[in-house]
Image (cartoon, rainbow, N blue to C red):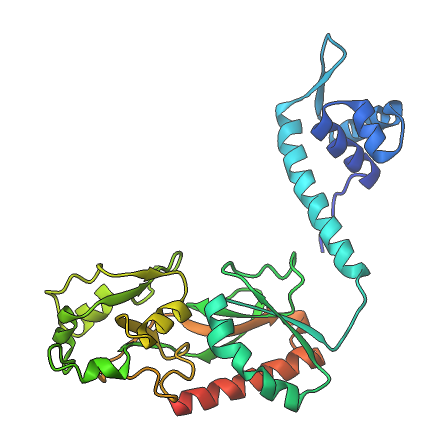
Length: 307
């Protein structure tokens, strides 16, 4: 194992503060030491690196050298990470508390309605749901496990396939019986309003143009119609009779079972993205995380059987 080359932490803190303030006195005030002590620590670091980090100006001020600017940017980020890691380490280790991160639509349409069964099976667990559209950074965020939507292959993480996803049109049942605008085949969609979900950052997400091309319909304006920021909003609009939504098998919830929405056509397009449950390898077998992983896999399997 290669031995790390690390300069004194005290010198790094003094240099980083001086680099932010470009003033030894203000850096000293922040660190509760004298300006002279800051200058001495900076000199120690420069000697250790064998590189000048500051230029002393005629006005008795200081300015970063090119190397100093690059080094200060890196050191500042590392000290922020160290601060966050220390804060996490100081938190009480509550083994039965589990923070789960996932997307808003998945949380509302799939995960939250099922939490009751998790509580029945594991009454000792205290689950906290955090919704976010960005990928969880387990090293920086207070998250234990996440449900991700993507192509898989999450390097450095314990990852398990949760469920695949397919897309199909859904609408209010009343639209099926509209004599003026029947819905018997996909080409009949030209007579109806298409409801869209506004999705960013997912290049292969199935949209109306992709679904219509899949079923061989090319003479419909697939871009026209209202747009919604989340799947559950588009489904709610469809349930209230405002048009036809493109639903996902994972997020359709109880709309089909309750009869609030119906599928006018059997065709469905498989997505290239899937849902995965992920967590750090080191904590995958922690009792609370292992219990959650086992429960959510079983729920996903039952969901697939019902679809």
